Length: 336
Image 1 (cartoon, rainbow, N blue to C red):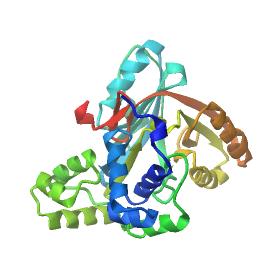
Image 2 (spheres, rainbow, N blue to C red):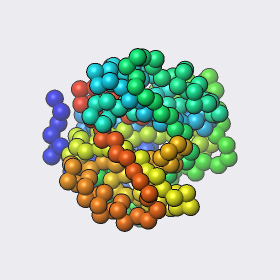
Image 3 (tube, rainbow, N blue to C red):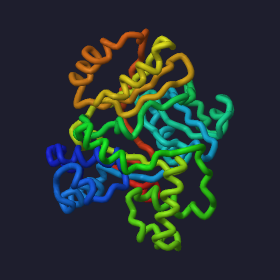
């Protein structure tokens, strides 16, 4: 049974925000920055994780494998959208899968080899079904979301700028091109995909390495930009029931400015420049429909350079990052 959203409070949101800034920061360090005890942070984090509200996962950076990311929109017959989305969610190359627009549109994020043509992506990775009425696939050209903006952190970026700075200062800054992980790294990445905060001791047990070797390898992969961390959150369990994808048409000279501005909004979970008719994508999360209208009319309406937009309202999300969503809980794909 899902836990009531009233159970979660501002401290939980501060912990979530802190994890966006420093996913593997110790409970002690998070407590020092937030201003509570190590035991309190550990207790709150474990409750969020056990409840299926939050997962921290370690991921191999697509750039380290020479991969690109594509956003696909599949318009289906309403009775086929569920099976198509469920099939896509089970694929490891799919990082997000959801149903929107009244149950007739499936949206997914696909990772593929860089330079792969649009038609090849469709033929190799999208399901072949007579129920597909239309497809569009756009390349994610540039991602605006960074650890500093923290993605969606419980509806508000609860930490102060100084607290964010303190946590970000301990995070390695990638330098140079990412290094491709080796076969020896596969058990390490598998363990981090299950729990991105697993201790060095636990990772050593999984890999057969010493804790010191685990620490060195994690530092090398993080510093090279080959290892990234994702924070998966079930926003509805925190009282934020409304989610939508906004597809913008913006003036090209204003693209970067607008992308960065939208990414700074508390409501924004993700923002990226894309190819195709719409050149900017944003995922926003709000409490409800009136809250979303206030966001459209009071924040987005005042941004100069937006020429048009479409809205895909999320009806059901099946996968987020590497986590499946099962009975209102985030779970590892192997557990479903």
